[in-house]
Amino acid sequence: MEKETRYLPHELIIQILLRLPVKSLIRFKCVSKSWFSLISHPNFGNSHFQLSATQTRRILCIPNSPTKILSIDFESSLNNDFIDFESSLLNNDFALLNPNFSLVSLQIKGSCRGFICLRGSSNLYLWNPSTGVHRQIPLSPFDYELKDYYFGHLYGFGYDQSRDDYLVVSMSCDPTYDSNSSHLEFFSLRDNTWKEIEGTQFPYMNASSHPYPKVGPLFNGAIHWLARRCDLQVYVIVAFDLMERKLFEMPFPDDDNIPTHCDLWVFGEFLSILANDYNNNMIEIWVMKEYKVHSSWTKTLVLPAFHSFDLIYSTKNGDFIGVEGFLGLVKYNDKGKWLGYCSYHRNPRVSQEVMYTESLLSLPGDDDQI
Amino acid sequence: MAEEKSQASSSKMLTLKASDGVLFEVELNIAKEMKTVQAYIDDCEDIETIPIPNVLGKHLAIVIEYIKKTNEEYDAEFEKQWNMDDLQLLLLAANYLNISGLQECLCKAIAKRIENKSPEYVRKVFNIENDHSPEEEAKLRKEYKWAFEGVDKD
Image (cartoon, rainbow over all chains, first blue to last red; front, top):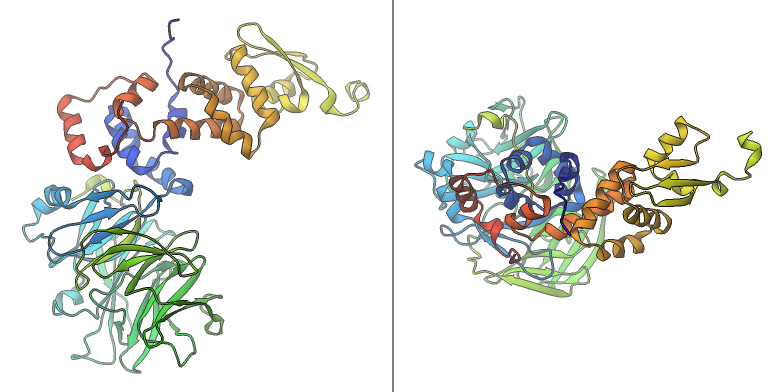
């Protein structure tokens, strides 16, 4: 029986493609020129991103400088597949155009909508590992002044949905220079320039532990950091509202027993703190039941400590994903039960990891990409 | 008067005529799930036989069955019975008849079936001609090497 040649109309092809994961769509750019245009089009990337059912999360790792950049899928239970991005980064246009580019000094500063914000020795980069789309951004004027070894500097990256704009935020406080204030600057991708926010800011330093300051979680349209108020010598949460473009502060939970080594992240629907109590070998999880309401900090879980665990994020069903020493990625459930691991050799003194969502999104003004 | 004739509108029957002449008697509330049919009824109230020129009897039968039985469990098993050809024809039918639930179910099913396949396989499925030059295609395959790993063999 002869098969009739049939062509599905364009709108139906789109409906099918929107339900595919990013990896398949990147591969299918090869199918034909029209599929290439369709999949590469910003509107398609936007529609695809909105369909949250297809959003896949991976972990980007720079385990040992300077050799590798890996991307690992740790959420799908079988097949933890690795992508080695090093060769594609080094062959990529932005490496070739910038003679100073090297993997050696790359620091992860944020992750938002499929884009990773990286700080190199002389530039910042926004990079979408799935599509290869990238943009080079100058360092903030005050960052440029700071010494290279200064890790207290706060950096953040987020999205302002009211303007469809991406912002890189920089807070510079050099306590040796002026211990009572910091400089708050932000770079808007649409404006393509750094601006300083007028007015004195309190002197904040990044309080998250070494090796590199942790990426500030995005929550409720703001970037959050664990910070230290140099003038008051206390720990606080400081946040930058991406729409209002304003800084605000939130105190820690009121508990004299709060240990100082903490992770700040988004746990389910709440801003949370994971506090490591090394003395008692326990982990306390605090949750801010009502955002910005200090008294709503509630201790919700106490678990036996995970062995030298550094939290990256928690999955939709409440599992904790983090890294452990030299091993690699590990997963625990919310009862503290060890669920599995994914090993890649990492150097705990320099390794950096961040979670990102795969996306096909473009950056504003991508048609005239540098 | 139409109102006096029938008690509940659900007891009224309608006839759908497929492209190959096969006739289906369906209850009005089933037929109304097909928004195209609903629009037809809205336009001509007294109609009793509605022509469905784009859909074969075989597929119309499946569509009607789907509307009657659809629920989470049924939907999960539904697509497993059909080959890729039928899935596409059913999608065309669901699209023409404007049944959003079925369209969604079929799009998901087709996507699932091609998710881990090669570009060659996908071209065959959708009858697409490869108009990339060999150099262009090679460049894409090199640039996105990672996306070609772990793909099902054709």
